Amino acid sequence: MNSKSSSSEKFRSLVEAAIQTVPPLKLYDLEYQTGSALLRLFIINPETLTAEMPDCVRVDHALTEPLQADWIPEGITLEVSSPGIYRSLRTPWHFEMSVGRRIKLRVREPVIALNGKKDGKFFELMGYVKEFQGEAITLEIVEPALDSLKGHVISVPLENIQVANWEPVLDHQENILK
Image 1: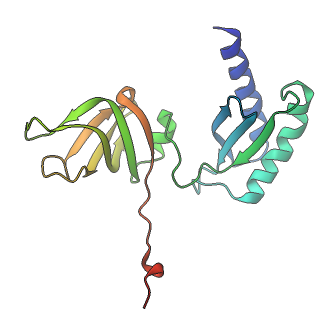
Image 2 (image 1 turned 90 degrees about the horizontal axis):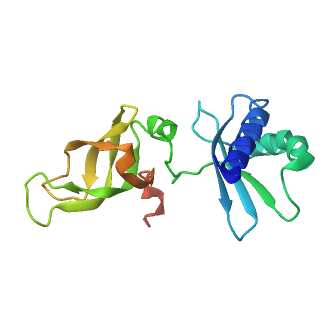
Image 3 (image 1 turned 90 degrees about the vertical axis):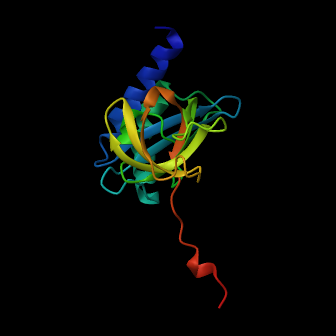
């Protein structure tokens, strides 16, 4: 294990320990944007699958003392946030929490259309997570909207998922002029 990985794991452990003092919140993810000096912590209440502003403030306060001790160098900005409605899915836990949700994903190896047409290779899919099996998800496809895939249920290994995020259905009815 290199020192960068070791430092990252040590930092993650420190953050998780501090967040445990603010139940029921948990660390959802952390992100460091190289070159921007911004460190983002995404927190979540597992019961509501979100975090509100007071939750972020409580976590920020819980982290102040441990991080001032020796972890945040001068010039680094710490931001505590909810993962948002279009949250990234990176870990098995993220996919497990997404059962029943619509997600958008890009796969490393294409999903072949079920009708065998030569134009049937798809790298980007949208669908509902029907099940989480530890190393794969079962996805009911809603896009691409081709007869060969739409409505079919497929298994997608997590190792084949390059990037994924929630893709909520938003109700825009209130925006229609009457």
